[in-house]
Image (cartoon, rainbow, N blue to C red; front, top):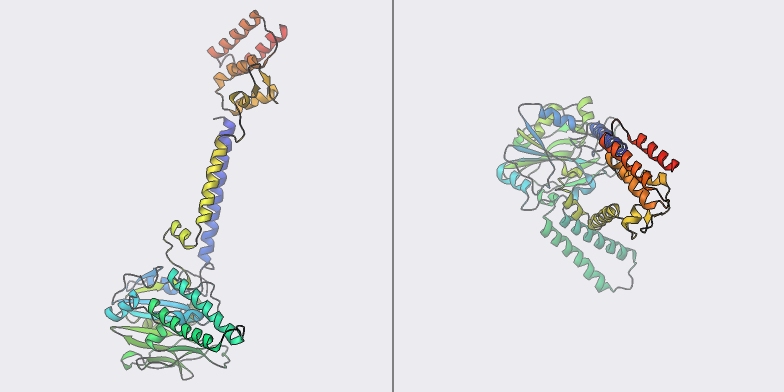
Length: 438
């Protein structure tokens, strides 16, 4: 390999290392700032993240803290000493939160005595990331969306050509679809646990938020210590008899707790009180400790913010149907490698060397271009003179006397015998002088 090509490769590798290092540095700073993560995610370190709560518990010897990025129905490692935190569940998606019978979370709560805490993101900050779902759930949601669109068309009268009997049959099929959806995915958590989340019809939020009044938790105990300031406009309604109203805003419950088998469930209509900003400005440690329920294993769920274990590149390709792009890229690489290995146009060894036929006519190249081609072909320095002479003999139409030919061979042999003392340039000049005299 020539020095010029070696230096080119070294430069390209250095540039690639610099670009990759710069990219990693930028991404590390971006992730450190936390703005790439959803609001109320434990990865997020800005005011609307919950990393301060996570890291505080992590540094305390009394707690074992971890994050969950697997689907809630398949999460493992939850036992009777575990509290699972779903902090900042999107309000719009809350009605579709389900509790199937085979749910690992609900089994751990009901049979092992674990604790489930769900806080709602009331929409005061936008949710750019929705809870992760399976392909089966996505399919059912899409089918329900189409049914609801058909229902809206009927209500607007866009399908007047249908008879009343046909409309009634479609309405019944929608109800059946909801039942089949519950059977396939599990009942809604609101339905199973008996509660609803409703917004105030008309409200004016105080500038400093609503002050809460204490209620009663499980066991009839009254909340001790300070309660957080409430900024959510949502209240809990239609509560089943098992629910205890832990905290109230203007006599309406906003934090409730109930037993569920051996364990317990907590629902709160706000999440700001666990944010980094709230822990800095208005912390409520007693309330947060009560929320943990005396458990020592704390699991922060991140799947509700759209974060989940991908399972590798091939799984992502299958999930997002990128097979065409993948095979197209593969075909492109194969053709690129083929094109780099050999020219697409037909040719021959003589043409590749810049010659046509045995007569030795140069095809579109001068002597200087031929020399450059030889250099680019990585000819060894010790063979360069002989290679030049070989091509010259094939291409030259000039008659050379035997004496001149013998003298040229002598010069070439002297250069080959001691190339350091009798260099290539000197040999080339002497051969040129011989040809000039003859």
